[in-house]
Amino acid sequence: MAKLFRAVIMGPPGSGKGTISERIAQRFGLARLSSGDFVRENIAANTDAGVLAKTYIERGLLVPDHVMTRLLLPRLEEMTRHSWLMDGFPRTLAQAKALNSTCDLDLVISLNIPYETLKERLSDRWIHPASGRVYNMGFNPPHVQGRDDISGEPLIQHDDDKPEALVARLRHYKDVAKPIIDLYKSKGILHTFSGTETDRIWPYINSLLSTKIPSTSQTDTQRIPMP
Ligand SMILES: Nc1ncnc2c1ncn2[C@@H]1O[C@H](COP(=O)(O)OP(=O)(O)OP(=O)(O)O)[C@@H](O)[C@H]1O
Ligand SMILES: O=c1ccn([C@@H]2O[C@H](COP(=O)(O)OP(=O)(O)O)[C@@H](O)[C@H]2O)c(=O)[nH]1
Image (cartoon, rainbow, N blue to C red; front, top):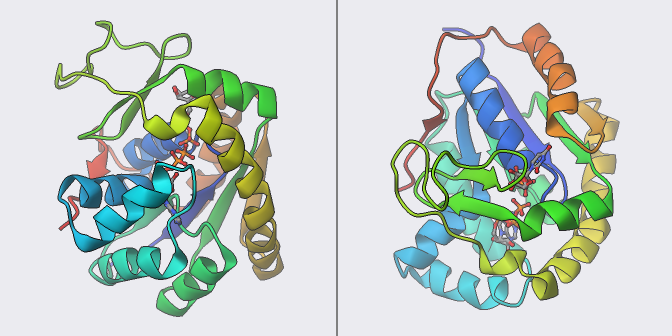
């Protein structure tokens, strides 16, 4: 069996993690895992953890570590035979340590994007909740306004992209990300990419990953349904 590949993508809200994850998943055939999608699915399904998580998300806060690790680690244990790319986890040092005890990461991508760019992008971000596909009215608008290109279903905006929640989220990101970044740097697996446009960053990520994983002919993002 080919060697499995496990990667994490980090960056503040709006830095392009979702956009880049989708490209990586399509180009390299990795399973794409998103902690945010997982939390939202739990909220929609009214699970105990979902109801609890909602009270934090509404205030622009992170969900507590013990809730997140309880939700995600069993999920990762089911993925022992898949290569994957995780977006949104770990978001704290405690989560990074918990992840560390579950699996060995091969690579961490960290995105470094100016604050003004983040604010502009998020005020105009639209999402197809079922697939996680993201649109931006300027950068990658849907073919039909307000509708997902593939399913035709309605697009939504996240409550936590509102400016009130956003400022708190950005401040919080800076504080909590630094020790995680330092940890991955010390392990020698951190790769940082800076810039204002995903299209300009992407070729560098693409060539880095090409040296680490074989590309596939897969054209559709592989999203593993959450239980
Ligand atoms: N690893 C995590 N730890 C704590 N809370 C999390 C984690 N992942 C997701 N959440 C919660 O779920 C919310 C939505 O997750 P999602 O990844 O979509 O976040 P986001 O902040 O909108 O991300 P981004 O804007 O960076 O794509 C977060 O704002 C946070 O409250
Ligand atoms: O170069 C870019 C990359 C992304 N986006 C948009 O910015 C928003 C945030 O991107 P994404 O959801 O990928 O970021 P994340 O929050 O996952 O890091 C989305 O509306 C994207 O369409 C953009 O306008 N230009």
